[in-house]
Image (cartoon, rainbow, N blue to C red; front, top):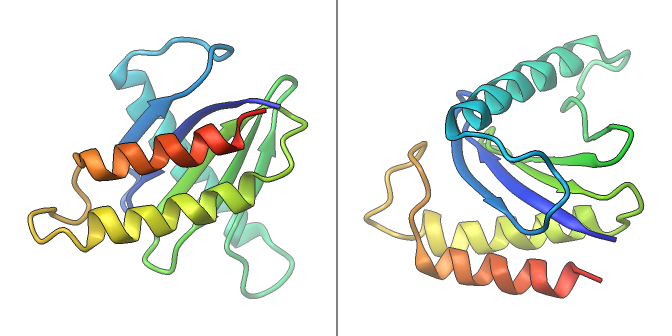
Amino acid sequence: MAIFGLWIINKAGGLVYQRNFAEGLAQLTSNEYLVLAGTLHGIHAITSRLSPTEFSSGANVIEGETFKMTIFLTVTGTKFVLLTSLNETIAEHILQRIYEAYSDAVMKNPFHTPEMPVRSEKFESRVGAIIGSGQT
């Protein structure tokens, strides 16, 4: 099992955090990551509208041939996306822990502006510890 990367997408579809953890995915430019985040934001909105049930939060997992994207949507509309190998089984748990770290280290920081890129050493170190414990 491998964790390849983490994205945080704000409620407008902008990429506010991106970090790679393992080799295996194509290396992209920062502009390509921004385009992918916006595209995923749109796909997520479409899947929530296509649901046969009235209240759907949209896609939770998108699988490719060699990896999967697990999406955690917060009540504020922020999306946490974890890119993992197909056999990763604890992605939802890891995303929950990352969200808790984000709430503590980023959102409680009086100098952080919501919807702007995340620049927090405390958050970086907590994410590293969480992902490190999830890698096998």
